[in-house]
View 1 (cartoon, rainbow, N blue to C red):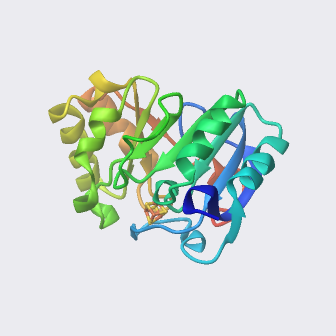
View 2 (view 1 turned 30 degrees about the vertical axis):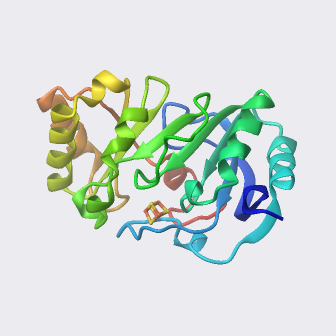
Length: 218
Ligand code: SF4
């Protein structure tokens, strides 16, 4: 079967969306295997290797069978697999609201414009800041979301400067700041955001409060 027709999948399951303006809504997750980055604080390293090869039609059927209005394709890094692009379009064709979570390193220009891209910008504390593909910003519009995970004050200042210098709030109203769980207190970020009048949404990793912080498949 050609690469465009199969995917290596880590898991497909239903839960609630945890980290975006869709947080709290019932959502089916398709988690692909493999990532070409190694963020210091990554909480899905189990998705780096292994997985099950499935046909694109099988993945589509499994996601739709969960019967959720929202479907998120995540990883790992989903955009490394060519079959993800037609999968995203097929999910849109099926009437779902479709999200894709991506690292900001992979090229997002070929993602179906009906999809909501939730794209990371990697701050220095991730160890992967040099991998940000800045040209991706040209493909970010009002339906998309930009997420920066902060490990410390240095990361916050990096995020603040990037938001201002690159005019990110003119591209999308959805600018998300998260903290590395257990490393940076959200209350500190809230104080800094208020002081700097930054146009962002501070968010918590909801799953880590509902389940055990290292729980998988939830
Ligand atoms: S891009 Fe995502 S999956 Fe890949 S290492 Fe970073 S946090 Fe983990």
